[in-house]
Amino acid sequence: GNEKPFLHQKSLVAFYIILCAYWWLSALQIKYGFPVNTQQRFLTKYFTQTRYYAFMVYRAIPFLYEMRTLLDWTIHDTTLTFFHWLKLEDIYANVFEVKCKRDNERGKDFTKPQPKFPEKFVYGAGAFIGLVLLLWFPLFLLSSANPINQPNPINTVSVSIGVSGWKGFYEVTQNQDIEVVNDD
Image (cartoon, rainbow, N blue to C red; front, side, top):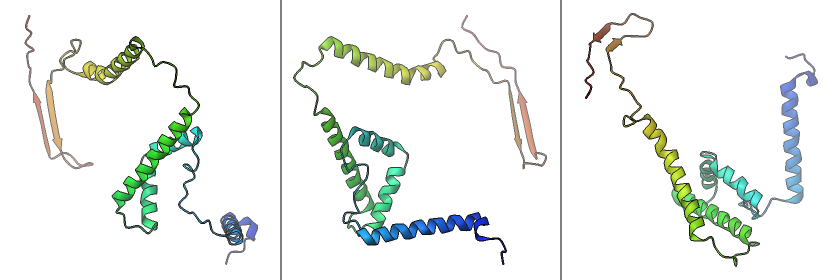
């Protein structure tokens, strides 16, 4: 066997600490009882701006929301299919978002007049132009319709087929001089 003392075996000590924490949490559960509502979601329990933003970050992490929903569907007794359960969870998430937004608007004064047409036009048109530039400017910059782009003629083609580490068993190279025709 192993002649090392218990305290010098770090993995054994770590396992013992985890086991003691497990026993302590189990004793607390026996003492105070099992929670009645195990379906409670810790992020959506209360409607605050902090919880709203934390929930938005949680939903933005790719596949985390879907994986949690899949695990919930797996362990709960339900007659819903997974896709119906996913719809139900999505409805719950949308209701939570709306409730947070409504609670945030509770203290605002809606009796003051709404923005006038010129102000709305400047903001709306500015946002629209900004989005168009953001989406279409890179496409135009890199497209062949851009007048500053010069043609990049192909002069040589080389093809080699083989197995990595061995000399290729088929190689071909084609050179051609192609004259560029200008409309000048």
